[in-house]
Length: 165
Image 1 (cartoon, rainbow, N blue to C red):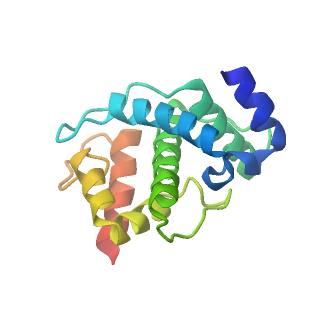
Image 2: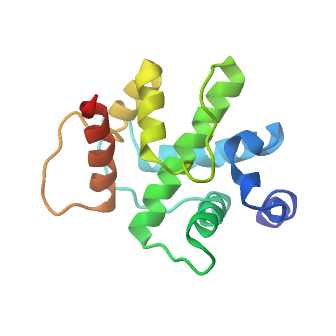
């Protein structure tokens, strides 16, 4: 599957991994992998630390965006990879929602695709999605401050942006 994805999507360049540029069939395939990633790492009403870094297709998409934004040879720490995989998975979910509901939303660019602010803004205009973020502990109701892992830092970034408005 990764070889086929590489030939049909990655070979077309970085813009091809933007959710809005995926064909319906590839969006469905990537959405399934994002669902598995999110389901495996975020349980409703149970805040747990992410252990799985994601499917190879999901990771390849994240690396393609990072390569475009930071240049070839850029590396990610495991925490950065997990954070960006989570944001990319949520971005794929947002695109699926947009296509299935004809909901209007600003389409992401390579520069803002992995932005927490995009996720937060969508959660603000779509209360069901915002509630999902809270119930899966992607956005916590409260935060305990100890040694901050990548996951706690991501949650804190999202929460602080929501509370800023």
